[in-house]
Image (cartoon, rainbow, N blue to C red; front, side, top):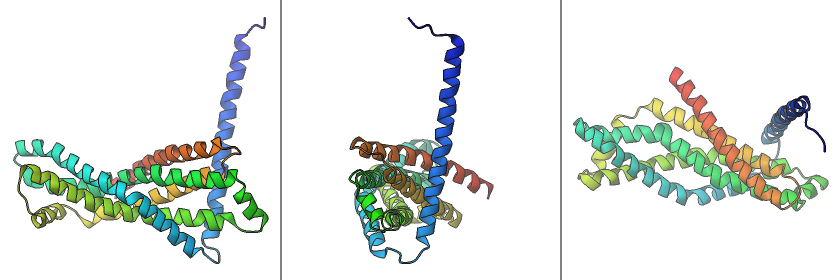
Length: 267
């Protein structure tokens, strides 16, 4: 029977930690190399406009319904939860402005990005992963076609452009849902509610939210395409790529939002 010595176990643990660090830095290098290829092909010749427009339509069509439902629910919940404390302080007229600022600054961009990370990121990871498994990407490379230019760049740019648009749409739907929530207890006209809501919104509230939405879209597109494009052989790798795209994309969205909030607070 083989004995386990403490020194041997410690050496094994150190080797495992060293291996994990090496894998981490190798993955970082792979991502940077992948990002370099995307930038190189984005500004190259013969941009795939048809594929780009197709991906924009797919992203908008897949996400619009879910974002509509989520936006209305968020507006209703924020209004219903915030109304009682404001009533106690006699400041119920501030409710539309508070909900509008909350939606435009934070709730709209983050919730939309997380929904798109689950809906779009997983779709990109699964689609490109299945193409890698079935050797379609390999066939493009052998035939001297550029899979990065045709498959990756249009998807990344479509996500970068469409997620800010979907964010603005979610803000509008959320404000409409808030108006519905206000009218559960009170009777407020839509015009009066909109005037009260946007009286508290400044131009500086909108610009940072829109800018960070572009970064959310770029992160989701890059992560989804990277996970699918670099999927391993075997059918199980398609599910692994889709799941990893969702988890990593959602985590990076939260990290980017944290950085954006800190930068906005300094301005």
